[in-house]
Length: 331
Image 1 (cartoon, one colour):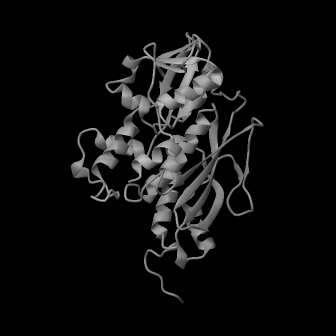
Image 2: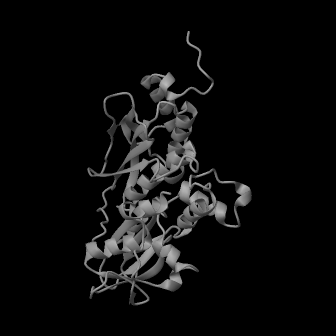
């Protein structure tokens, strides 16, 4: 019998053994009629409509192993996809996970990643869990997650329904994840620019929370359905920054969005420019604002510009675009 180290690499185990270890840690989705083990999962959809989204996290542009543990990566991969389902007004029901990793990846890392996936689902979308996926070998660690959701008889809330006179509202935090990313890039890189693990003793007040918001975001998943039931006219996940995503909503709806700087806290620029908050941006009729949402602006007629702040056109980029911004932070 071949001896293995206490923490073998994936190259020392079979695909079946790795899958068994993952499946043992990811739980069971309530909506799963057939879970892992067959060629495909079967997920119940009582409403007859399926909301589906996918997101890919690649080592380098999306995360750094010096900053993110396996648990962090699993949690974040679940959270960012759950937020997209919630932004349609749906209840997340299941995740499909494809994992590509180098042969020398430790099995303990994969197990903690599975723990992160499970615990994010348990905390943010109870009843949702991993129902299947794929494993392969790659020189670059890559995690691709597809999330499914059920509208439960409701209409999907699109980003194209905002109307002049609507209130612009937000659920969740803004600018905190951007602060966490700034702390990582400013303070936890070596002289050559390579990332180094964060040290708690080097963090000031509020910075541990900011790092957590960046590495393990906790979007208000349940409030997506709340917004839909309340009659949200438009909604989307704020993943690339409030400014950029508000522009996208305004463009899709053919309107302008005028943000109130006073509602954006002490640092409106960081709130507008920062990304990865995964808050829910929604618009509602003026007399409707459900619990958990707070007003941050108004929808107005489109004259020229899509995004304004206090009535003045906002000239900044207003968010994160990986095709534009990656080179600037990849040192």
